[in-house]
Length: 427
Image (cartoon, rainbow, N blue to C red):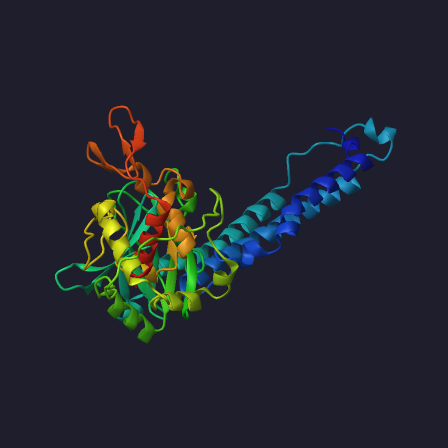
């Protein structure tokens, strides 16, 4: 290609493309660095170690880029075509290279790789498992990925005659202590990722895996499945809530309690007022008010709602059985004893629902109950749960042979209001 291609119009075109490439950064600001899933805002030693490897690699490769690009720019400018005579001039004598320069470049490349390799190997060793000196203070949790939510088990927090503490989509951990998370999957490959606390680690079928993390201080952290796992992969989220030691112990004691019982009302509601439904299929499920101080808002969720209606809650509890919710969900101390869906014993105390997609508000919960497929298309609550050669029906009944879906569960507006009141009472 002739160097005459580097004309003023071409340079203008290059500048235009460069400006166009900067548009996303100009419009989006620095939210990709400061957002809730930023890997640059590290809040724990594992994430900090991994970020240091990134910076080391960035500086080394950045220096190489500057040197190579500088030499290329210098050669392009110095030996550019200035006139027609230059364009038709004979090419200079060709050589077979300079051994000294070639050996020097090989040596410099090896040195650059060593600079990157040393912190990388150290980080791999450090982040693999809890350091020996901290294992005596280690806390252990089991995390299981399912399509499309996360189940968290606390094997050291035993319940009398009922296994151990279970939670869904919100992992509560003690701040300042190393936490070893045993990673499992019940179906396909998932990937566990809490950007501000630790990097991605896969959940592999029929293979145990693990990671460890530690929150430097109490906080509220976003997590995400980082491996494509099916239709709702992009909305398979979770949260990690790190609490001070006493607050964490209080939370554990609360979680060991059965589902909260609301004092029975002496009268039944004569008529449940239908709620105003204003949401749309792709309406966002998160509010700026909550995001401004998520940990404080999480703490507020641990207390019972004001102005509860015992009669409405009782009606919702009855509907929970009538609508066969108990077939998949568990509410310890209540009727539900299902195991294929999230444990709802303390769902009212969680800040998220629908696999971490929606903020746990009355409107969002009603929206999820009435139209789960509109919130997360293809979710198992809607299409049913495969059970061997059959399918446990959900809102729809699937014909195993044809795959055809037909209505199975229908929830009216007033029924959703009662179910919402019941679930929000479970603190």
